[in-house]
Image (tube, rainbow, N blue to C red; front, side, top):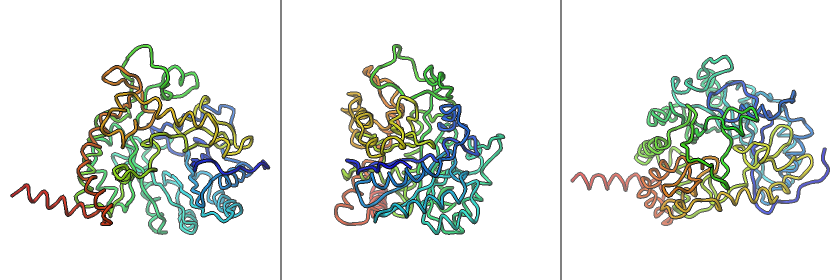
Length: 424
C-alpha cells in the first residue's frame, strides 16, 4: 500500500468511486459511462484491488479538511462487486476513520439486490440511490439488459428489498426524449412507490465526434470552451437527448404539482437547490455553482479525473497510487478546470437575470452559440430560463418564510389564498 498519507486539502472535495469501472449488468441506451470501457482496452480485471481500495479510503479520509467524510460508490453497477466487497469498504472506513464521521452513498440499478444486500445496507446506514425512469413502459423504453430485455420488474423487486429492510433511499430519474413527455405521470409514480427524495438528470448527449471516435466512444466528448468550432453548425444530438426547451416544461409541470401539495413532504433535489440560491446559501449541486472542480471521479485502477462527465485522457489528474488525493484535488489542473466554468461564461450569461441560480450549468453542456454569436452557451439554456423565471414568485415567498423562521411549506397556504383572491 502507498505509504504517503494525504494532507488535508485546501477545500473540501468529493470523489465518486467507480470501483467496478463502467461494467454493468444493464445496457441502458443513453448511458454515457458504459463506453468508458474503451478507454481501458487491455483491462481484464475491473474490480478495484484491496490495496487500491484501502489506499483510497485512507487517503480520502485524511484529505478531507472537515470532520465529516462522505463516500459515494457508483459504476457501472457497484452491486456486481458483491456484499463482501462492501464489508471490506466498511472495515477500511472504520480502520482509518480517525475520529471523523463517515457516511456512504451507493447508486444502483437495483436489479441485483436481495435480502443479504438489504440487511447489510440497513445495518451500515448506506444511503441508496435507485435508478428508475418512471412507470414500466417509460422505464423499459431505454433501461434494458444486455439482451435488450426489460429491467423494470427486477428494479421493482430491488425496491421492495430496500423497503422491506427500511433502507433509506432516493430515486434518480433520467429525463430523456421519451420520459420528458410525461412529467406529472412520472412524478406521481415516484411518490406512489415511496420515494420522498427525487433527483432528475437530463440526458444531454451528442452524436459521436472525431475526437471521441478516435477513442472508440459512442458519444461526443465535452466541448472545448476555449476554442469555438470553425463552423456554427447546430449540434447533432443523440436520439435519446432531451429537447433543449422540453426539459424546462418538464420541470415546470412537476414544480406546479409540488408547490401546491408536497412542499415539506416530497423533496426534489433541484427545488431544494433553487431555494438555497434564492437565499444566497453556497453549496448544492456542482453544475449550478459558479465554479466546479471539487467533484472528482476515480476509476477502478486509481486513475482520478476532474469529473465523472470528463473521464477522458486529457482530463486525467493522476493516479492515487502515485499522488495523494489531496494533492490531486489542489492541483493547478483541477483548479483551472473548475475556474474555467466561471471564466469561460459567455457575456449573454453574465447579463442574464437568472445567472445567480444557473451559472451556465454544466460545462459539458455548453456547446451552442448565444444570440450574439458567442460560443459556449448551454444547450439547456431555454429550459433553465423558463424554469427559474417560473418559480421566482414562489421561491421569493419561501425565502421570506425561511428568513422569518417559518416553515417554507407555509408557501402552499399562501399561494392557495392568493388563488382564492383571484377567483373572487
